[in-house]
Image (cartoon, rainbow, N blue to C red; front, side, top):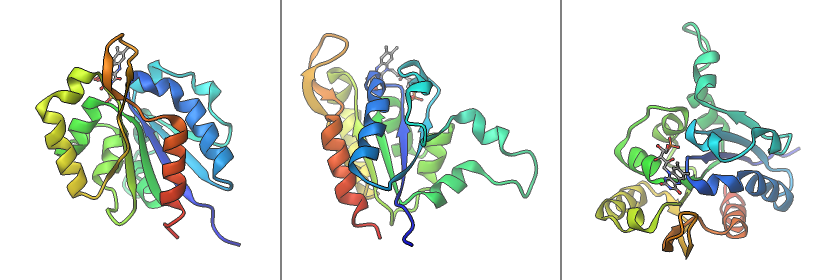
Length: 189
Ligand SMILES: Cc1cc2nc3c(=O)[nH]c(=O)nc-3n(C[C@H](O)[C@H](O)[C@H](O)COP(=O)(O)O)c2cc1C
């Protein structure tokens, strides 16, 4: 029997994280047999109810990194997750996490997995931020760095944002993210 494809979804503290339950459900519906784990930053947890996630999706937060380790020989969660996954999806990827992963900072579970990521495996990220943040010159520099690592960017798109501003910065539509994951993960094995 062939092993299921394994997707590590990571979400950050953008308001677009309200779509995480929908995104996970659609990934499960549209990619049969897909195994999903979710890493959520502390700030992302403000935006969705963890009890509304599909039952089969295991959720990891920063505290799990330390709860599962007490002595040499114990498993290190961020390394276990990078080994487990065939592909990583960061959706939404907020300005803070984009800056951190482009600079190599690894001060939470999500950023540690990214820092240890096997660049031979696909990493897709979906920026989501206010238009003013998106248009800041730092954004272009960070995108260039991430592109250099081979990370695949999806979006952002233009619309009226949650803060009331209209313009580029919104996370790509869930259906487009799911289709991109389906396309990329289908080529992994
Ligand atoms: C209501 C609210 C909505 C936010 N939405 C966004 C957003 O869409 N994009 C973004 O880059 N930051 C947004 N932020 C700011 C992030 O939550 C903040 O930068 C946080 O430190 C991100 O932490 P994380 O990257 O560890 O999840 C928002 C903050 C609040 C209070």
